[in-house]
Length: 565
Image (cartoon, rainbow, N blue to C red):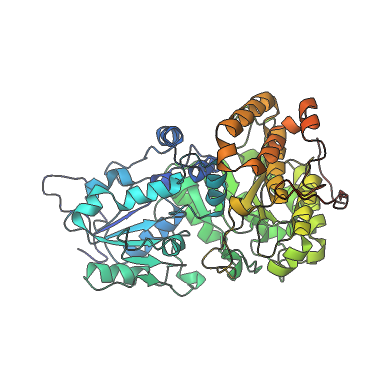
């Protein structure tokens, strides 16, 4: 083993193969770029039935390797770990590879296997929600792929130390799986300050801590990646600072990386063949923001424009944004649109279901209840008052639509202490958004381990009220109406058959009305006769015996703009 030595690689397996001392990897579903379609990656949140897993495996999880079978693209966090280790060891001692190639690198001299994972137990928001709703096959693809990785024959044969980190590492502790999966150390949090030390200990044969919680790194200690990341990920900022109690990144102080730092990583990705640059951030609109969440339009536009003008960058995809900066500075959205529409992946040429090209970004609406917003996420509306949250949402989405942004929005149900009035407020907001252009993702509340609500009760479908079921149905109805209007009758037929054959047994009668509402059947002549008077917002039905009227729902109209259909 050589520290700070030769950088020539000699990883190809031969008759004298002894293994590489440090091997880094990730589950195949997290390594794949899904043909440069990050939204398709949500398929891995679905239950691992035979047919779906086979389709995903065949179409999306094919490894892309270098000549020595090291991986061309892997998750961004794993590339950070690789960079830190290469400051300490030679490239002959560290390799990053796809799980399919572990037998080429894990041998008798392999001392440590580092694994990065985002959702190893299927406990993330999307996986918890959609595995439980769909329920075919139960366990999610995410958790199946992770289990198969830690049980890989080469790992079992040579028994190296297993060190696991990444955004989903907390799930393994939550599920009490460290011993069962043979994991030696679980790294929870940002690892820049500790990752080299833990691998040094593994290579020295020292006893490792079961759980490691590193101190937060200083920005100048975060290294540049040396090799390409999946989707061409480049981190432009880290942390959020809004303080939402259900989310971990919002609890971290926000800082933005210098443009020079960003462009060096853009070059690494493009030089390795990535056509996309994925901007990893909790809020693209607050890059180098000023004061209390005031957007810095000049710096944001300069950053995006510089990336767009870099030779070889064909697509740019921002990860997340908040809504308040959109209302504060609509001109910023307009100027970004002029750049990003020329670099968007989402065009009719890419998918025929897209009627025109558009920009997308993930936003968190979370709830329409001002009471819940004040209690759990009062910083989300800054620099505005949280009392104005529903209006901020409709105005912001309207402005985004004006400039061809169709956001992917998460909306949550099941927050602690959520009442019927809170759920009705969220349903009202979904109604207000019904004519806007977006994709609405309903999710169940999940108590993440490293957030303030970590001890709260996990929500399951078995405990949802009629109103909460109606919320899920309303969100799906919106998505079907906007994105798949041509498939309406197929959706109706499939919904009826699936309810009769499976969901009536799995979820019971509570699921019938929201399923038929989502499919559009409730809007047909037959549906109106069947469901007359059964809107859960107008009558609450408890085991078919109790009904009580609730007040009429007044639809709010946002004062912002919005291209509506």
